[in-house]
Image 1: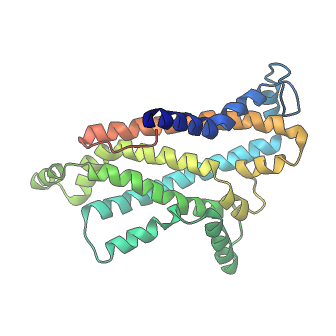
Image 2: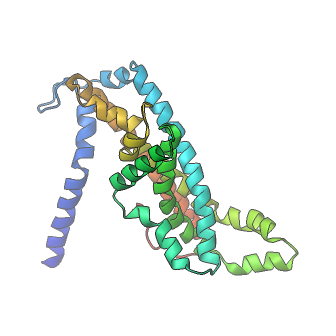
Image 3: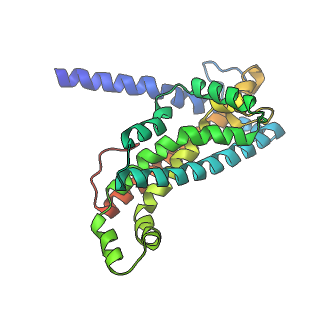
Length: 268
């Protein structure tokens, strides 16, 4: 009996969680301009209408620039932090790592407002680079979590053997360690890219006059005629996010298998 109720609960929870995502493409392919049932017919004109908006193209370009730059910077910082936390002991290690991981639990609006006050107080003009700064701050803890798992799965004897054969610490890291954790690095890049591309609150506060994709989508909901186009755009973004997360999970599991570690759960 308990197992049956748990199954009912799980199905109800999944339906509640994913029903909006299922409804999204239904209205994206609907021919009507009004988002309501019943559906009037199948049409792809809303997807074609996306390419007729120049502001959307600029917003996509800005968001891609922010996401690519943020993912590279966050992953680079994540490599250093994960390597230090898994390989070395240093004073106040737990406290320092806890502060670095703090953005995981802080409300994004608190982070955004704090960054806005600090940057304006320093006289920094709001731009795409201030958004990148905020996205690196929130993406770095995710990269550390992913890369720490990859570094912990390494066989330390491989590193010691490289030292015995005359390799330096730098060459050992470049030739031995990085190739082994490369699946984790790729997974970290993809996760950071997805988080940055979808993030709204920090972009809303720190972008200034530069449009980003989430901010553009938010602004378009003021115009009822633009909602079907946003539904089509949302469908594309959902598909892109699913593909990126699937690839990231593939590389995460490949990295664990490559290093001989144990899979303790992932994104999918």
